[in-house]
Length: 403
Ligand code: HEM
Image: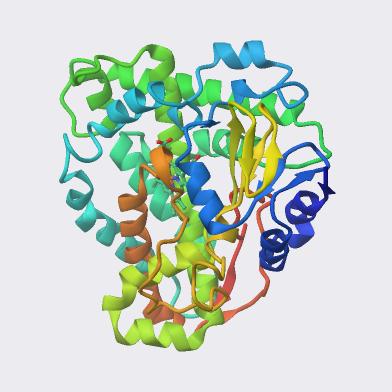
């Protein structure tokens, strides 16, 4: 059986600024066993097929030793959120979480927040200095999605310093670092999820019996056909929404600004025709996506592109590689915001397709639309910028720019 080190090279922090040549190697190499016993998949059609295959589980409790979390008993006490569950449990909880957020029960919810997103974005752009140095992350890309998800969920915006550290610890616990014992990181992640869950359930409980248009209020006062969330389910669901609702969108906006500054011709096109914004955001989700890897566990022995993959081992899908696969996209390493054939994997595919995609799209379009006039004369001060550690959720930690 072939043994490879591509996963080690991809996750090495030195590769963070540009993992794409390694993804090209991965697509050439095919599916191979990595030194930590996991399997990597980087080709578009294989990833799509696997994301739609019920024999691949999102539930880590299906992992076999030695890939099983030694603390699994505790993990079982802490209910996984629906992103880490399979159907039918996943479907039930996703439907309950969707009830106050989107169709079929709340079809106008995201559209209704459009004006508020425009207002928040406008205020953030106004607050930037006329000239001088800014950090696109701290001054712009982070405050927008945090403010929006707090507003939607009904979390006080001024509590951001309370949950910021928990959120960072949870994101850190999701990273893939072969060769490193994940025990301490996973334990820290569990503790952070516990604290954030308790905090969010307390907020929700205080709204019981009271009116309000936020999602926490709806979760405790307006149960749908599936009934009420249990306390653990509410904790896991609200935590997932708060974390997923901002940690990814920050990177999309920051990667967007970085990519536009690196491609002045494309920035120019966008400034001249804001009608290109929706397509520009799709192209960013393909070309510089925030989510690079998704983990799954086969429930049975599987054949993936001619390689036999045993039951219970981690299978790491690399959608960021699939979205650059020349067998699917013409000229895939070219950033072209007028690209039309663009069914990228930036939001995943299959039953776990991103729940927040309509919101993320709206925020990124508003953010890039409002900022792009200011970018015409802006200069990148560090290229590549310093990246966050995570290889899974990839994006700059800071993006210093001179306006
Ligand atoms: C640019 C921003 C975003 C990106 C790139 C992104 C990406 C993704 C991806 C790739 C998945 C699939 C995970 C898997 O298959 O295991 C996913 C799932 C999910 N996302 Fe997003 N996301 C973004 C924004 C958001 C926002 C704003 C929210 C919340 C409002 C959100 C909530 C979720 C949830 C709850 C899931 C789990 C869905 C399920 O398991 O059925 N995401 N996201």
